[in-house]
Image (cartoon, rainbow, N blue to C red; front, side):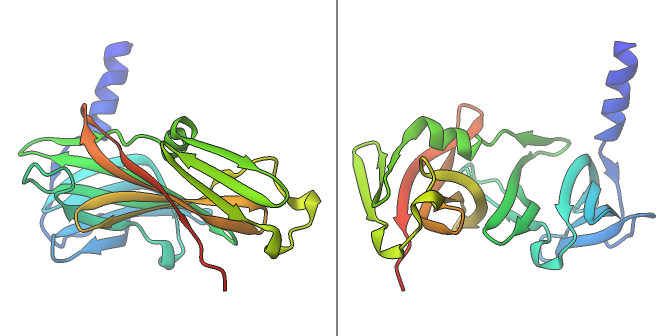
Length: 226
């Protein structure tokens, strides 16, 4: 039975040749990068895309358990860049699983590409990074954030938040936004002090270390008041 299950999993993720520009019956194109010859296909159900297929220069890879919202504004983002300084390009795909007022839930998937290998590499969870490295304290008048030897104090009294709406502590996770800029993978997490107010964001820059992507630097960036 175990051998049978392993065989099924292998079939789900098998590499299959595909002609460039070809369609996949039953699937819709939801994102593409013409310059890199990369196309993402998926099926649509109940307001979500699922059962993904990635056509990378004619080779097709399956990711049946991925999900993304169907709003075109939040279509999957494709990057094909060298983000680990090995002089080879990695495939980075950012998915949006949910969004709304004050909410953005994204996940990132990074693949190391070889001749016959399409290996997904672990990216450390940003919330876990924050919990391990960021110390916070929140009072009705100020928010304090400490990251290593850097300390930030934000006066929240001018905002006029009702005391009953202030959280017990600064909250992270309502907005998780990934980005790739200048061959650097980053993630931004909003720092909320109440359901309707964020004071800034924690920015994590990743690096490839010990066979996974881990935090290289963590900093806090305060939002500017209007």
